[in-house]
Length: 113
Figure: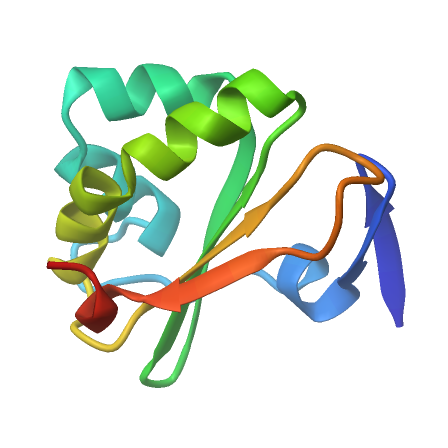
């Protein structure tokens, strides 16, 4: 089943299933946010985002409400990838464009330099 977030149809399992709790008692989203610098944190606060961890699979989903923020997220991919890589070396980043501007952009952290 899918739910609508900013007009996108997203797998409800990604949204509704509680996140796996890490050993430190934090969620993957909290752990990722803690690894980010202040510029990335500011950018994330302007978007909707979530880190979902299922077994060895970790996916950071970022939903950008504007074309401007989408461009800033793309420009910051290397820093975002470095922070996410601390949680999982095989994590993926999925970036959703503003409504009606195409399909999500997805890449693995191993693809970033």
